[in-house]
Image (tube, rainbow, N blue to C red; front, side, top):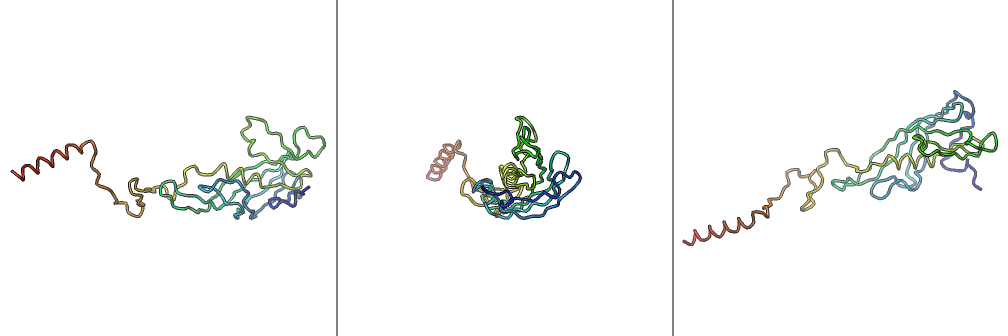
Length: 200
């Protein structure tokens, strides 16, 4: 059975656990977990994700407050250009010491989530001995939830010409002279009259 400390996302918190008022700062780079978005918008598995913040010990658990910096890979939804911005998400996570209904004093490391709790998605278990916090699920959940629905290369992106696909950001004056089909018959009638006048 794998040990919590062997996880590549494990953070040792034994020195601050159960010591209210103590803090442990971290500034660590983790590999991005799998399942964060897709080829259209997401974070590639294994990409460097930097986590900066601190674990603060309170009476009933540890609170992590900080930021997650990840390389977002996406396509602009208007012009389809690839986007590779540095992306930052602020987080607050709770790691309780004891799971509700645990059989012993240290708990099982499993957290009971009550349906309807606003903060439920930000609650994560510590290892069974309370010595390690595993950041894999927090990283995945936080980044997936914050993925932009319509990523843009820039706020005022002009997109592509709907007729020929030209990038309007590179040629903002680009346009097509299009005759309204509602007046096509009139244009043809006008052309015939002009032709008759020339022959006459």
